Length: 156
Image (cartoon, rainbow, N blue to C red):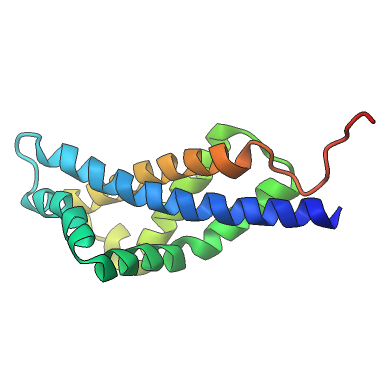
């Protein structure tokens, strides 16, 4: 039993770390695609170039990665524990958890974003939520498909 729980915890950690990385890549990709649309806000171009800066200056990339982990860690832990305790293995549920965790992290770093009625803020929230959906899917692929602290019954 303890071996199974330890395995699940390690899978949760690995899934989370990879999901955060893929989520950040998704944010950059979404901004890059949206910056090519006509009448896109000018700062979409800046956000599309940001990953190049993060790759050119690795400490900046690591700072962004660890900041994202800090901002989304607590809510993701709560969602992951709920999924593990209740053996929730639905991909869509994990995607919703990922989107909610991403928007929650965004709200932590920018508390007034929900009150700011500028269309760009709502676009940012939507982009972050979409990247969270992608991250939730990645987490499900790594750790969520076999969620459950209880050991599955096997025929011996």
